Image (cartoon, rainbow, N blue to C red; front, top):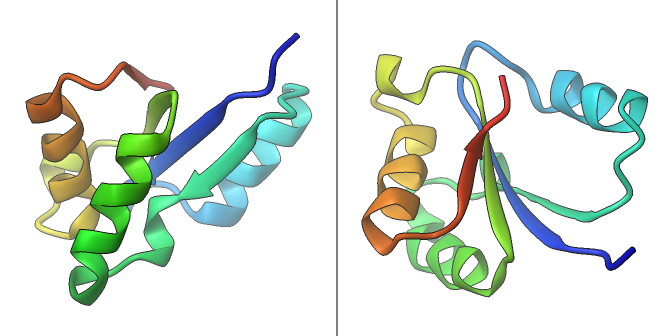
Length: 87
């Protein structure tokens, strides 16, 4: 089983700790990069990191916010990255 680099988008209805627990409880061992670490001032940085990831996983309802999670989700869709709504 190959490890994947997965960019994780966490909308406000989830917390990063909550998502980490879900991933751990479900037995995932991939390399997770949390988008919540990157704010507006680091937008170019997360775009570069997302481009290098194998998949994008979205937790929560990003359309209900104007935060960075919404922009990350929109960017992933616009770029055609393989993305999954996980919760």
